[in-house]
Image (tube, rainbow, N blue to C red; front, top):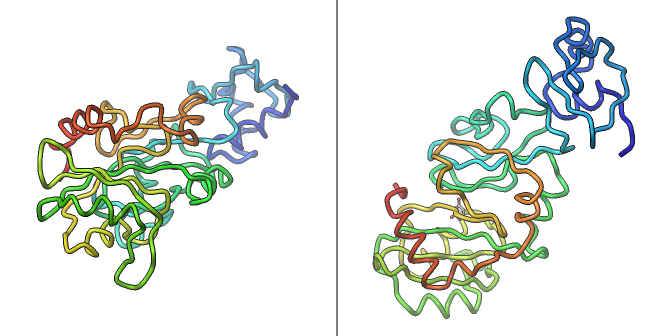
Length: 261
Ligand code: URA
């Protein structure tokens, strides 16, 4: 891999400025392969060399990909607007300059939200042209009706005349008010408006997957995890298993039923 300057490497992957990095290096707080690097203009090989700043290792990945299990009450924007920003939930060791939530979950929606500084990947995941599925579990106010399957498959027209792309929906065995829905786009309040258009009402909503990446059960509400290599590839791939098969959706809904508020 091409060599790059230590201060460039660190500043691209942390919140630190080059002058802060210079000072930390002078104090001996930056280590390369375990030894203090006194000069921040040292050249390193990001593919081979390990870098630590104040005892914390700096990931070699150029961009940061963070999966947040979003709780209710946080807004999917970089600033605190109508509530605290989801960025407040990112722990200091994962923060870099330029992080933003890739796409929006409503303030009261929970579940899988990607936070990244990679604009190209975010655009790819969100664009309907990329055909990357996003699956949600929905708690409905009224029982699921089988007619929704064909209505959603044919591309439902919303109250404002906007037409949705074809979407899959299925009822979960555990409850007649629980459903799975898969979207390839992200219109404003889309799931809520789709169910409103068939005369139902969404009481709670949780996103459980983005592409082939499923929200891990161990990731608690409000927790973040850094995605590395394979997980990042999974974001842009088709799911390995079809979550809509009854054995998967019934399994997931049994776990998730308690997590839906
Ligand atoms: N659809 C909605 O209605 N809300 C979300 O947060 C996501 C999808």
